[in-house]
Length: 90
Image (cartoon, rainbow, N blue to C red; front, side, top):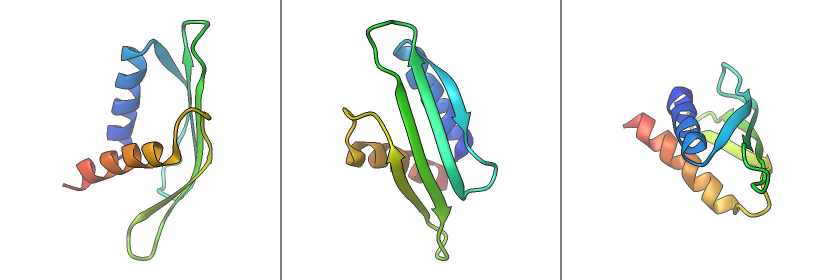
């Protein structure tokens, strides 16, 4: 899942003139994830996400978003993470 997520984030960054400046995703499933994208253009805001992620006893990931850009809704961020998760479990 993490390699698929990294590939999708990298693809998004490349297409939208961003670069990944922070990629702190622990080796194990549980932990604090921090991902930050910065634009090469001055007028575009940075995209900075921090989440607590843990695997529950029934083997599902729980994601608690702690910080993200104000113009991105929680539901859209969780939808994107779920899409990556489901594409990896098929």
